[in-house]
Length: 90
Image 1 (tube, rainbow, N blue to C red):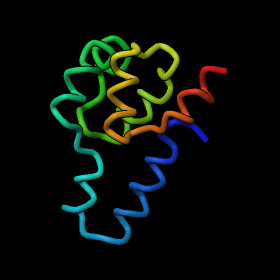
Image 2 (cartoon, rainbow, N blue to C red; image 1 turned 90 degrees about the horizontal axis):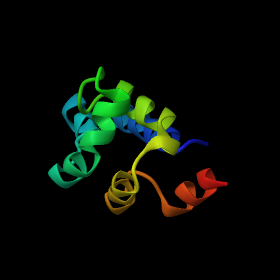
Image 3 (cartoon, rainbow, N blue to C red; image 1 turned 30 degrees about the vertical axis):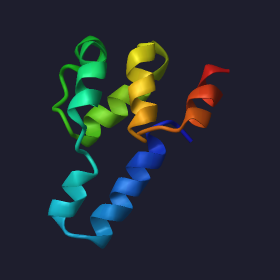
């Protein structure tokens, strides 16, 4: 499964099991993550709104082109596992 597929599945399950307000939290990015990935966002996915499913899918497709700073921030934020990053490097 791709880096964000797990997150997407979890978000769908979360949305179905709790209210819409709680589901929105699943798409909230910290300021630190936004700063670390700002240039990657503009380069690869600037046409998508922040904190949307479309952005998550776009960033997943851009995975190999993301900066190390952004990938490290995604791992630190729990958005993707280190194991998934290593798997995708192969």
